[in-house]
View 1 (spheres, one colour):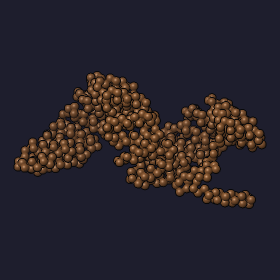
View 2 (view 1 turned 45 degrees about the horizontal axis):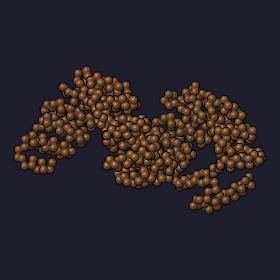
View 3 (view 1 turned 30 degrees about the horizontal axis):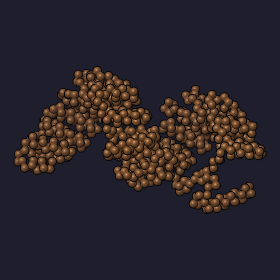
View 4 (view 1 turned 180 degrees about the horizontal axis):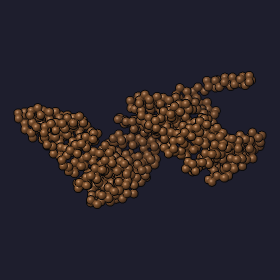
Length: 639
């Protein structure tokens, strides 16, 4: 364009054709500012714009996404007394719609003395772009009433609206309309139908349309494979991927992203590696989306080293690259690596998103890392991260599981919007921290909300646990017996387990045993183990023997049952039976798993096992423990 501009400047009296050519040239060269600058020079030289000038200028404004420049141009058209044609008016509609001013687009549309299919389609497309889907369909109805036949772009816009709305009924109706108007063999329409059915969850219909599509292209395959993957049918997605390859259609970057996501969902490392090799063999230069999909696949499939290699090779890492690595580490219980990478992420200047932070808070919950959880909370506030319900729930859960129930309550009460998970987190947290009565009071508040928030099976588990921790036997029976009739929740094995635990801890061992006998479902090892533990506390040797026998019938190598019955015998002075149980444990190759505990000091979680001397501060720790033991002995003597 520089050369063209030099020649243009040598023309002493350029005509309208030359001005329009220069404006069009700059607009097509992705230089909209220069196109508008030439237009200003044209006006200053006394030339008037025409129906060839304005469409190009309007497109330039669209590229700039400048509604103010567009309005200035619109004003210029009105003031000049120029009578714009439908192309110019449709261009203004598109300009305002693409700049997010759909109401101005509709004003221009209504001012049009006549409208063709392009005008109608432009307005419908604008509504869909602005997520005004109902208005788009209403305008389509009006379009049909005025006997204007839609074109393929009209139908593509409306099918996109159905996909975004996930409105299968509207989608089927539109499909029927397409068939009636003999447009079902148009390839872009077929692709849009496949995408719509996949997004609406009707995969059988998507496959049916796909099979009828005459000349499938990459977009057709991508729509189906992506839809299957998003619907959780990862294995089916991979089957169609290989069909695509065997049919001779070359997969695109989008295809590989979907296929790699499918491998990640099913944990198929072998196919994932084959896909990685295929990307290299096809000489596809992986963009950030493909690289992120590879990182995610390797992390989900249990090869963090391969994921880290790709991550380190990626120059243009985005938040999704970091999140894939961090969440992958957390899911594989490599918590130290996850937090180290989060620190590196902060130093890189990339801000964490909600998914990253929810994963990190979940890790803090797992390891009881209150200091680290608190620092993440501070990060959220310092970086003005929008606290949606998921993030709020993760904070409540983290504080509750780390024992800071006051902060859990503070976050819970500050949440503007709460869902069932929010209530479950705080009720369960209160119960686990020994605040059973407060947990039940909060559950009562939850009930008062009516149909807005409904208790589910997790809520009832938390309530029954609250009753257990506070010894509220009658309340426990009341809630358990009301589950089906009042809360429409069918009791599951965990609810029966809570009741057995409640009765056992309240000393009602025989009642707990009777409760198990009357259960409509088969008790599991957890339930029997809970009752056996209660037998030890209540010194019920005979019943303990009977229960231990049942547990060992179910699992002869169950270590906990052997240890518990051995302890019951020991506390009753039956040392021969203790030796017999210990001998059986040796014969069966059962080792008692060493007890362990953890403590957080200055944001670092230290874990210790019984007889573990590997810690670097082991001698100092031993000295402190000896000192504490002596102090406790002195205190006991004083008492």
